[in-house]
Length: 142
Image (cartoon, rainbow, N blue to C red; front, side, top):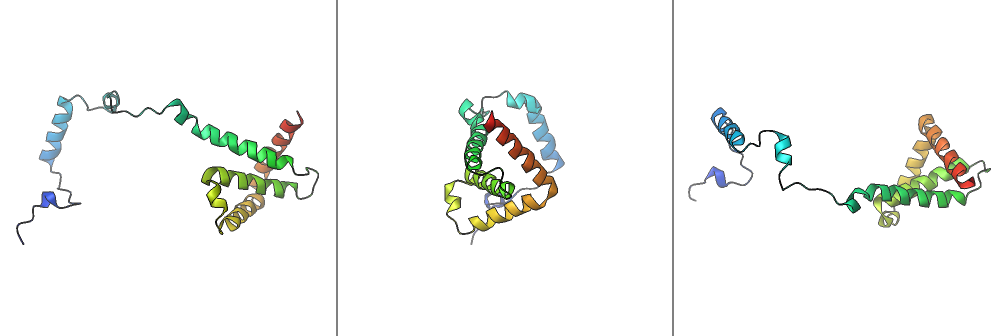
């Protein structure tokens, strides 16, 4: 076995001495990239397209449309309305976040049940859900 050059060993990080750090700082000043603002002005900046910027909003809109449609099928006068509607909200949120493939997994129903139960048992979350459902019902009546 021959001589091993540490600079060619994968994952090897050479130690940074004060001399190396000073030289790097000097080079940065020479290239005028000392501040982040000047570095951002360069041509290698990723600017998301309008379509990319709207993706989260489209996800929320899809969630809301699906949730409203499912909740509209429920009887708001039922004793289990909040529980059933919460389950529909959780289902819609999971489906829109993780895709329809997630629903086919055997663990999905357990995950949905645990999330729904946690939301309904915590008074903070339950009141938020009740307010949200009230607003959905109001918007459906108008």
